[in-house]
Image: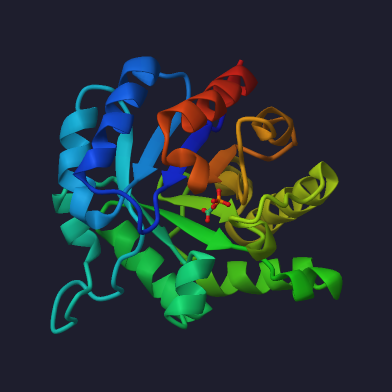
Length: 251
Ligand code: PGA
């Protein structure tokens, strides 16, 4: 069985003042029936880890460099994230693909280096509005999967986040049928490439405007194993009901 996963992506938000939100979360969700992952800015990883210590809530990075070390001013390696207490890292988020011109092969190299450093890579995929309107969604997802997911992927070191670009931060959400179609497609493609064992064990998250009001409905969609949550992960009052909805879905 796949353990469900609620992941929060703080993006470029949060200073030490935000750590109180994590204290609240750790009080209400320690030893949860679902996995919980918070990806704060790298500057907060160490302090977030200290606040969450003993709660079972994990921390992760939001990006890593594909190289292990070297002359890359301002970048962070996967080993550095692990050293700061992270057990996971998001790679290939659409904001990084857009802002830093990251291509599928860059994302694949980052995911590979993350896995080799012992981190779980949360690989993000998703179509633009133009691609959806042109009925190209599944082709885009297939291309991103074959281009961005490394061969050494397993159910332990890979999580996939399906995040339609047009749903991120917009309050717009695909229909449950559309989410189910893509998640089922992702599962089938995993099976074809890696075999049934891996396909059965990789968590596939939905991301894009997940809120307390729509989480329950999204978590009822087949092959949705949790969520990657942006804006609503910043406040415990918003993220906690989403985690509760996932705990309910986990039974
Ligand atoms: P959102 O962001 O929940 O604010 O839409 C999701 C994401 O970008 O991971």
